Length: 529
Image (cartoon, rainbow, N blue to C red):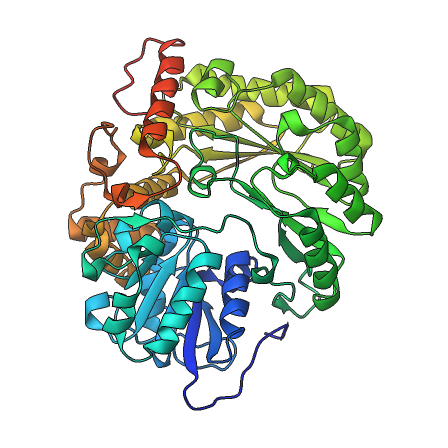
């Protein structure tokens, strides 16, 4: 595939060969800002040449892993860095290593495999016998140290591993690290944010410049892992965002921007920033927006700036349940915003909900259907082209106040999703997340190094859901063990990671969640869900 902004360095003696691997398909890798950051940061070192690797197919036997730039084998690279964002992609790390001729077990290979990303920060243990280094930190403060150490100790794996300190975000399982401190920059330095970004060349791809506007979130929703691990919240200065956008538009050949933030309109200069980008003729793609931050003026500006779909995330339609998850439902505001969005020119509306929440009853799912119908009636958005409902399944993620809850019985969750589709039929398109994958997420998110054998067997089975089931049977894993409620006093695999959010704060959030749930129903809360 032809691309722009690719880095190709001529080979010279002593050049450190580094692989930037993404355990998914090319289209996902090229949309990952962290992959772009790693690629350009590594290549900014004169002593390093980095090439990219991706999967060729989502499941089945993976062909030999070759770099995108030069077609070189993965086993030729001494330093291999994986960025992972989705727990079910852990199996693809193993698949890609095997396809590249690299042994999947850290103790049985010469290469140094480093893995980072949100789920790894939250709980590195499931990969602790596969990765040599697990990074509990952010790129800006960890990767430069890693690269400098790799250059100094090139070819000496043990020396490199021993040089990486757990106090600086590096978890080296073979060293027996008992605690690792989260490493993060106090600000978001502009020099680490690439403006030239690799883009496919061709008519089937819309070029864009990804711009991270802020990192973390101050809202503290009890279920949100990224909001808790990327704390404290940091905003990129407006002038830095503008510079990245301006330089990126030239280097990437596009006036389109993908603005990245967990809560974009909470940026202290959001209005001035959006207005200036609009005045300069940029079009935006935006993440979901908070209802309480959307004013008619902001909606109109966003619509004029080329945003065609408004994305909102109520999560639930029951007010008391919304308080329990730390994201209060603003029903009247939702109806008002939907109505206003139609008026100012948005062509479609997308709503995010969750099912399988702790204490959730069938009646709560019926309320979601009722709310979707109310939104449609109030706004005029109707039918699959105009109104879309995306439904995820609650997974108790590590490092969140809701990490202590269990997951609801799969049969009940499937029944709720079926009911929702029936009740919303004709009004909106309902896109449910496959429950089976949610339970895979739950196991991998909450497990420990005992999952090593499962991941390797799963890779041998070719990945995918069918491969997961076959591997679980062969290994004899008790899936229910990972989906049960957890006592707050219990030792958990991820307790070795010391984040900015103290564990006591998570426990207090959990107690507050329980308090709200007890106030709305008499169901036992120690059981599933």
